[in-house]
Length: 483
Image 1: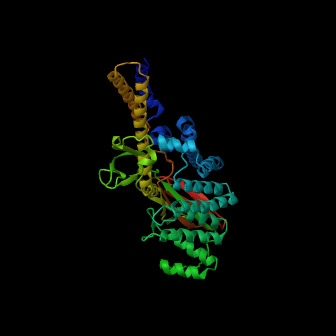
Image 2: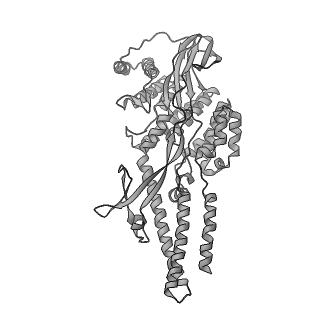
């Protein structure tokens, strides 16, 4: 009876599998919100976030707060926006790793683990928080965000061991940091930030950092702040490097306006399946290989195979990994004019490139983690099947040894089937990401006349540009617009 009961329970548990591990990518789970956001109905999108229970789970709260903060920013609710972004920031800053949380990610799948944001997403928190504080006129808090960009940069450099071919810093954030310092009148730190941004580009042979060539405006800002600080040697060094000569002409009476133009939608993550085989090398060591031969990843069998399972049972593995899908391929084609004079924005951040390239950089690490997870599941399946067969055989009251063996194999097969189903259902890629971010950010710096200035901003081919009045007061002002 016990045997029949065990076997009978297996189908029932299999029926529960879809409920234990729901299917669908992250983008599909939040489609209701995403549709409202894409249509520009930010109020509806803001409210819809509260209806998506998936986002209320503790492991997904970074995304809930980040999306809430972004929608509140777009609605002009800058104080509320920063309350949400600060919560997302708090989660991103948590350094300790909860053992149970890590175990869920290691044994089941990474989507069961707490999401703390991609590195570039954490930098973008500072961008929106700094803008919010600027709009609220809270200069000191904006400067705090500028300083936190330095802390975030140091942390990222530690994570990547400062390798030049890795996303060890964010050139856009360092440029933004300089703008924040300059708007607060701190020209010394503004110079240092602009120089750090320039040197980030210069670490690459073509001076291109994740899809963005060093902006002409950044070169001018660096030379201007070097001159303002009296750093003649630095000014001459960069003039020679850029092939430019700084013209210390009189600053505009009304100050200047930095305009950020955000366009497109950040790429979304989807699941990609890769297949690997576990093979034994000439020296007896085991390796995971893929059909193309591009990967040969060593696997320490002794470390995980405590049950002395026949490793020959582990053959083919399906690995579920995330990959980015671009949703916006070109920037806004924006048009800016001030007092009837046109200005051409430059690309300053390409989130498409940053997202895709940084995922490639950690590809081997992600594949290794996924294969280890799958191997552990396979070994657990083999071990459980062997153990259940042994227990069933020892508990059997049948006198016929053949019958005992037959029943034990049936129990083992049923248990193995259950483990396979659970492993198959639980294996999925982590497709979460901050999806309301723009794909591109362009910028330009515009001189202001003293008093009222008429700013017009729009896209080529689209009617009715936005028109607003900017008061030239002598300082550096910042505005951002979304298209």
